[in-house]
Image 1 (cartoon, rainbow, N blue to C red):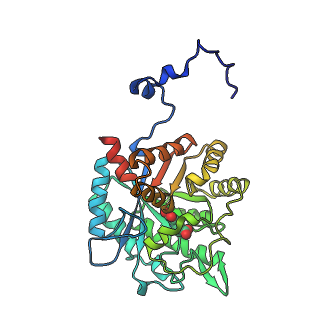
Image 2 (cartoon, rainbow, N blue to C red; image 1 turned 60 degrees about the vertical axis):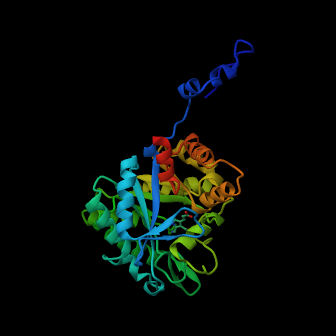
Length: 332
Ligand code: PBG
């Protein structure tokens, strides 16, 4: 798009359109709406309603009953979708991640409970093995390798079990190759043709996931995730990853993390014109909370500014731990 040649001062005075709140609102190019927000919550299997997560100030792990309560509140605030993440007792985790495919596992139970009590809310579930393995990797390990194809078989099972339990959107976050096609094929074969897939299509190996690992109870991750998650140096590769996932049957795609990868959000949304989501991840959340706690900046303004940045970059919506507080802010 070419811009018209600039009108000289004083015919043009850009400040005319900034002189008061009403005119700034009138000419705003981007807006944040509550329906842009997806709220990730953590569910646990312990006997207490809520348990604080030390790395994520203001975020608690919830019992299923408490998650249902939060779902009701979220819906009343206009939030359309919750993303569910489990924190499991260490005894349940093992090398084979068998709990990931348990039809009565924590997330399956949470899906059923929330769907029964709050039928109108959308449920997104993460498809990956890391909350279920004792080593914290997203896939199965053979020797010293995270193996691709055997992991994909587990992910397919996990997607079927959770779709059966009522999840509306399955979101593979594992970055194994070919998992979207395998999940889509299995969903079609088993009568789940309406289950949506939001693929974590361009997911980078990032330091910004640190607090999340604490939230789901990964104690010490052996090594890193660089053999499956993307290298931060790359941008063309993100386009190839997204193209593959769309061709394999993804309905929506995601870029992750958020602010450090805004250029990717822009390129993906412009290139594919698909519903493109962005995950403002735990480290981004924690950074803002830490700065606010020090008194360095205003919480609400800083949060809104980051979310608008995603909209400017072309995102259709944002997964963010700030969702509920932003929804309250937007309502006020
Ligand atoms: C795991 C998964 C991760 C996140 C969502 N799903 C972490 C990882 O890949 O190590 C990160 C979320 C966050 O940091 O907020 N498959």
